[in-house]
Image 1: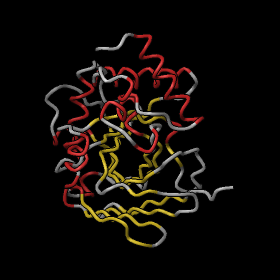
Image 2: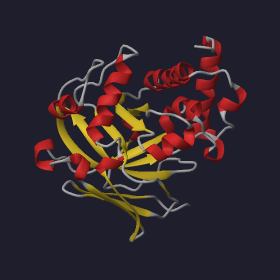
Image 3: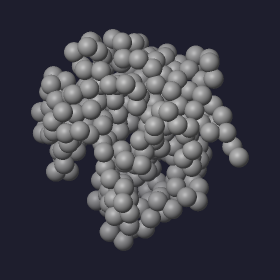
Image 4: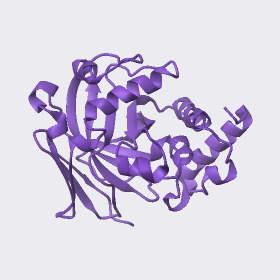
Length: 263
């Protein structure tokens, strides 16, 4: 790590404040010496602060799972953030959370039946440890102004997390080949994007395996009962108040989110 604990805390607090007050300039522009380890330390500081305020970690989200996004940010692997209880939104209710520059992504979510850990986790290990999979709409948002993010920025900002709406759960055996599942993203009744499970690192379970190995390097594991968002199957789509978004995952079903109109 290049940053001291005081700097990590300072930027963790800046990003937490940005949830309430609005996006800030990229920290990578101010801290060019910051490493990926520093970025995860800033993220972890925020997570601990949120837990201290009564929130709790209920899973992880994986980002940068498409080659296009990796190329854009000049990286060759995904990143991850934590999913908090406050980020799980009920599909039956309007999305009313304060969001600054939201976009939506259709994903496959994994709900684990048992922990996953270690540096040798593979696809079959993930499938064996999974209780359910379900369609999901992840709402990404950035506390970095105008989405001017590099890898350090998005990692420090909890992988540009916003919230998630989950669809009905299905067992992995019933879901079939997750890589082959077609995915469609609709906005206000119009098809915006088409993709498939294969767009997520070739197989969504491979992304989860990567995550298990990645957190193991920090002495952590994926816990039983946790929700893992495996990464977007299509490009993200910008949303605004009043939009109705729907994702359909072949063989899994549909999940929708309605963004409350501006007042």
